[in-house]
Image (cartoon, rainbow, N blue to C red):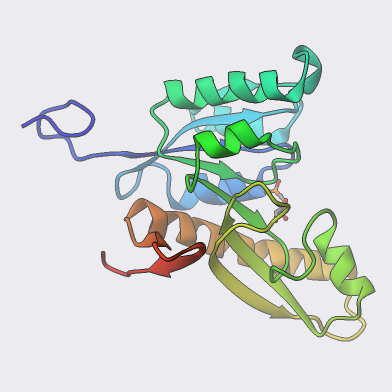
Length: 217
Ligand code: GRF
């Protein structure tokens, strides 16, 4: 019988599109840990920055890329519409924000409701927005961490899928803490995406702000 992809006998594939603006170390972790394994494929990598190193990593892995610089479009809505159409043309199951620095407009977010995930370098709801690591250091916090969450219209406010705390040692250099946070991101983000791909993550019916994890589901 044909499966969801229309191919007789072929197992279904869970397709990711990753959006990234910068270095793409999280994209690399996703390519290394998930791409081409257990029915998960990175179908495309998109960026608002044509010079993003993330695009080189995608090409190296043989993954399709596309760029959507803000200046190529009359406004953000039009840019997001073009990006959303490209994402849908790849039969995407999940949109992954891996250091994507452009704000997404509400029509984009509602088109992919509960199908966009983000990684943020703090224990949300603490330190949302820009420079979360600097915010934690500035506040003299004893710990910070990493959060993977679904994206809603707020700034880093969507339902949390996974979190891991990281202690902030007294006198730690920013670079050192950044490296520790990145190392945790590179584990936690692919793990959380894998859980979503396996259908282990769902939004609570009685509370759209809460995630229920059903391992092995
Ligand atoms: C990560 O620290 C992530 O938490 C934040 O942006 C950064 C992206 O880094 N959202 P990279 O481009 O994946 O190396």
